[in-house]
Length: 321
Image (cartoon, rainbow, N blue to C red; front, side, top):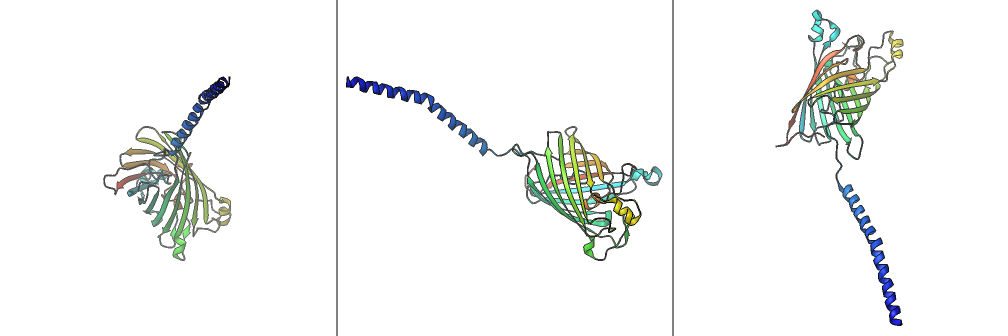
């Protein structure tokens, strides 16, 4: 009888072990599989978005893009005269020209430095741009910061495009500084947009009623029409007080918000940008706060940018960062 009880106890123990193996072991294996899948997913590198914009410059303003390490961008920017200047007198502005030559160099894939010289006000500019965050399958936007400096080398007492006379008492009054944040997103293979909060500080302004600090908000975008053709546009809304200027000078406020539209043509290492804009200035100190042209009066300028990228890495190819 005792043997039968022992056998029955062993039988029950075996049943419990069998049921436990069926019920609990698969669950433990499933949990292990799930944890291993999560660990594998987390160990994967994020998939970054490439070529939100095809170039570092949209039209007049910059974009969120930097250039690859040890790569050099050479920029030629050109603006003709006003379209409304007439056919006989100025051939719709084609008899005039303003130009800027610029260079950009990639210190890293996220950080570039740049310099240029504009014929408008004979201005030299320096700037740096750094990509802080990148859009990926885990993050929705790209964030880039930029800081720049410019110096006006015109002789004191020259007449500005606004009609005001600008006089300098020292070289520091010739300096202008600007800072920008670029918040961009590539929504799909065709559409990309960016917001650009901007501050430009002028050490010297033409009238005390104009603030030395010019705040503005830019918006820009591109829409890819074909593999090589892209429609682009940008608008900078400047926060101004025109009434204060009109009361102080008894003249209409001379400046307008900058608005530009154009078409980009991509050909290998070149990007050709053809556009119409009411801004003749091609750096932030000029087009953000000192745009004199008006679209309402057809006081607009035809222009183009040409970009060529050179690599200083042996056997390296251009990369979209």
